Image (tube, rainbow, N blue to C red; front, side, top):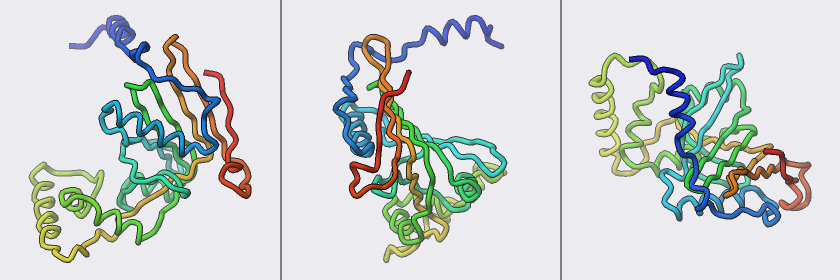
Length: 230
């Protein structure tokens, strides 16, 4: 049956969003100079309240033609090079980034009424970083990466399970821990802007945006920040 659009619209508008009386405070006046520090504070807050997959982020990419795609992945690390994620170099996201390194990432923690949005440029961190990440993955995840062929047409589930079983057998036989998928890579998104969005108990919202400035002699001078209109 096809749902009546009018009823669907009413139903969607009636769904709850945030528990406003339980939202944590956020004073942008106390925000640190580096957005990475505030991001990690918010991430730890999400872990503390039991958010599911608090380190999950949405990555949006566009290829040379401008076609945009998005997917959810796991944040692997955060350092001076940017926000890290991993994938095979033949994956659709890697192919898009090879054509157009500009991308965006978003974290969303509904229990806290908080969102972080990043826009910037993505860089491949090289074979050594990719190998280290691959070997740190659980056996099942390594097997899935060895199967590869991400997003290619699949004739049936059994074909995948057969390929996965064969890859898992290779992983389990690798007693020296040297088997690495050569195409596995770690990428870092180096943000130009980082925006922190917080819902407030009065049904309002706060938006604090960091912009990367000309590199100064210290990290504190690398960013400018200010409020923007909701």
